[in-house]
Amino acid sequence: MGQVEVGGRKALGVRVELPGSPPLLLIVAERGFVMCGFLNVEAAERLGVAAVMVSGVRTFEDVLEAPVRACTSRARELGVEEGMKGREALELMIG
Image (cartoon, rainbow, N blue to C red; front, side):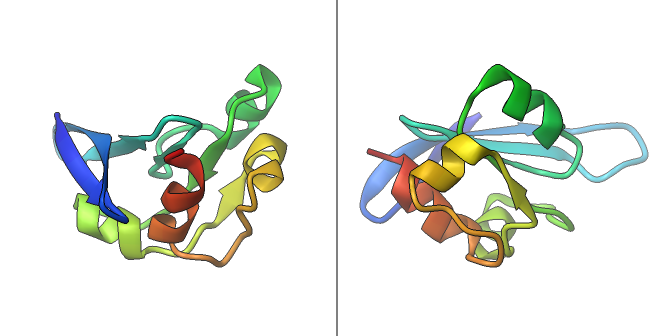
Protein backbone atom coordinates (compact mmCIF):
# COMPACT_ATOMS: atom_id res chain seq x y z
CA MET A 1 0.00 0.00 0.00
CA GLY A 2 1.05 3.54 -0.59
CA GLN A 3 -0.04 6.96 -1.69
CA VAL A 4 -0.62 7.86 -5.31
CA GLU A 5 -0.64 11.53 -6.27
CA VAL A 6 -3.38 12.62 -8.66
CA GLY A 7 -3.86 16.27 -9.55
CA GLY A 8 -1.93 17.41 -6.51
CA ARG A 9 -4.10 15.31 -4.17
CA LYS A 10 -3.40 11.93 -2.56
CA ALA A 11 -5.22 8.64 -3.10
CA LEU A 12 -4.56 5.23 -1.56
CA GLY A 13 -2.85 2.72 -3.83
CA VAL A 14 -3.21 -0.98 -3.04
CA ARG A 15 -1.04 -3.53 -4.85
CA VAL A 16 -1.36 -7.26 -4.19
CA GLU A 17 1.26 -9.56 -5.68
CA LEU A 18 -0.32 -12.77 -6.95
CA PRO A 19 1.53 -16.03 -7.72
CA GLY A 20 2.14 -16.53 -11.44
CA SER A 21 -0.02 -13.54 -12.35
CA PRO A 22 0.05 -9.79 -12.83
CA PRO A 23 -0.67 -7.91 -9.59
CA LEU A 24 -4.09 -6.84 -8.39
CA LEU A 25 -4.17 -3.02 -8.38
CA LEU A 26 -6.63 -0.62 -6.81
CA ILE A 27 -6.48 3.15 -6.30
CA VAL A 28 -9.01 4.51 -3.81
CA ALA A 29 -10.17 8.15 -3.83
CA GLU A 30 -12.69 9.95 -1.60
CA ARG A 31 -15.71 9.31 -3.82
CA GLY A 32 -14.79 6.11 -5.66
CA PHE A 33 -12.01 3.88 -6.93
CA VAL A 34 -10.21 2.63 -10.03
CA MET A 35 -9.56 -1.08 -10.17
CA CYS A 36 -7.77 -3.50 -12.45
CA GLY A 37 -9.62 -6.13 -14.46
CA PHE A 38 -9.45 -8.68 -11.61
CA LEU A 39 -12.26 -6.87 -9.83
CA ASN A 40 -15.91 -7.01 -10.86
CA VAL A 41 -17.71 -3.91 -12.19
CA GLU A 42 -21.10 -5.65 -12.03
CA ALA A 43 -20.70 -6.30 -8.31
CA ALA A 44 -19.69 -2.67 -7.77
CA GLU A 45 -22.79 -1.57 -9.70
CA ARG A 46 -25.03 -3.72 -7.49
CA LEU A 47 -23.45 -2.12 -4.43
CA GLY A 48 -24.09 1.37 -5.81
CA VAL A 49 -20.48 2.57 -5.61
CA ALA A 50 -18.47 4.74 -8.00
CA ALA A 51 -16.05 2.27 -9.57
CA VAL A 52 -13.95 2.32 -12.71
CA MET A 53 -12.17 -0.61 -14.37
CA VAL A 54 -8.98 -0.48 -16.43
CA SER A 55 -7.11 -3.49 -17.79
CA GLY A 56 -3.65 -4.56 -18.88
CA VAL A 57 -1.95 -2.77 -15.99
CA ARG A 58 1.05 -3.73 -13.85
CA THR A 59 1.85 -0.49 -12.01
CA PHE A 60 -0.03 2.45 -10.49
CA GLU A 61 1.26 4.63 -13.34
CA ASP A 62 -0.26 2.12 -15.79
CA VAL A 63 -3.60 2.47 -13.96
CA LEU A 64 -3.42 6.26 -14.29
CA GLU A 65 -2.61 6.12 -18.02
CA ALA A 66 -4.91 3.25 -19.06
CA PRO A 67 -8.26 3.98 -20.70
CA VAL A 68 -11.41 3.34 -18.69
CA ARG A 69 -12.92 0.10 -20.01
CA ALA A 70 -16.04 0.08 -17.83
CA CYS A 71 -17.59 2.08 -15.02
CA THR A 72 -20.62 2.05 -12.78
CA SER A 73 -23.58 4.39 -13.14
CA ARG A 74 -22.48 6.15 -9.93
CA ALA A 75 -19.09 6.89 -11.54
CA ARG A 76 -20.91 8.24 -14.61
CA GLU A 77 -22.84 10.61 -12.33
CA LEU A 78 -19.46 12.05 -11.29
CA GLY A 79 -18.55 12.64 -14.96
CA VAL A 80 -16.55 9.48 -15.70
CA GLU A 81 -16.77 8.18 -19.26
CA GLU A 82 -15.39 5.07 -20.89
CA GLY A 83 -12.25 5.87 -22.87
CA MET A 84 -10.95 8.61 -20.56
CA LYS A 85 -7.70 7.86 -18.73
CA GLY A 86 -7.72 6.40 -15.23
CA ARG A 87 -6.07 9.62 -14.03
CA GLU A 88 -9.00 11.70 -15.33
CA ALA A 89 -11.50 9.39 -13.65
CA LEU A 90 -9.63 9.59 -10.34
CA GLU A 91 -9.51 13.39 -10.53
CA LEU A 92 -13.32 13.36 -10.70
CA MET A 93 -13.55 11.00 -7.73
CA ILE A 94 -10.87 12.51 -5.52
CA GLY A 95 -13.03 15.22 -4.10
